[in-house]
Length: 363
Image (cartoon, rainbow, N blue to C red; front, side):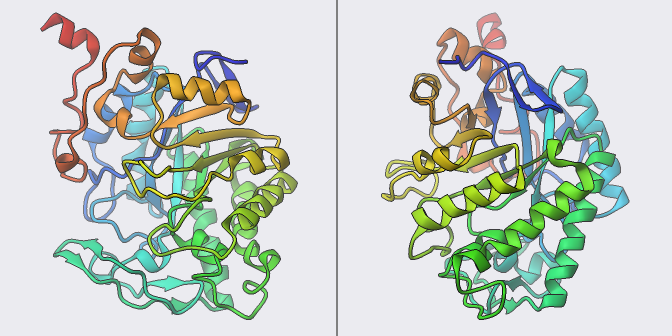
């Protein structure tokens, strides 16, 4: 069985030196215009030893971005803002892909200045983070066929812009109850047209997004993230196991080379669930590179590779607090603890000031 420290070709265009991947992590250090800032270059470069960095979720349009101070990829200023970041990662010997994000009904007009849109006219539970504090989500309006075509164009533009900005590829965000997930699951997709009803129809939007992105940047530079087990932000399905096994089979047919799955357990630090993982069934129908995520440490990650279910493991919050996570796992060194209070603040505190093991030893 492979080691976490063995190289892997994620795709012919992405040769990774190890199988420890930095998961996408929303950090809210961009401007209110969703333009990346110089501080972000330092943050990502610090973590360039990861086999691959998946960027924080990045908006494909103003309509689709509802998180305060999150970055975008829909205009020239944002592309220019990303260029020093991708260059810093490459200069440090790393690889980075952009995660393309449309939040759907989880957008609040206080952030976007626009109405939120979804597969159907539904309202998300809980609350939105806005520039004026936490607010209830408004009810979304159901996307028309023209809206769907327009959103596909937004994905195409953002994918092109990612390559212009120097990213090594893209990951489509199809997880966590956002727009693609809202089309996939029958709890949020109440449509009676070609995009709703049967599993085959509910896979259509995801398939069209994948086809659109592949058409812009190539299959070798395209991956996708799904969250197949449990309710996520009020988004659920009557048969998650069957739905996401079918989704993986569709991605196999489309030739998608790598798939990341966020699969929390009952004790997860982020949105726990008692629902069993779907990855064993997905492994049977998807032959590409399978990346698993959620609450792994080094030994648990290696055990999952030993089982043959996963080819690589992505680490989230541990990468926030440990810029040298790869070396810490390699040596079995203790990990820094993360500070939840600084996850979404705008300065360097809790962002670029976590010490490396070498810095701690020197001190």
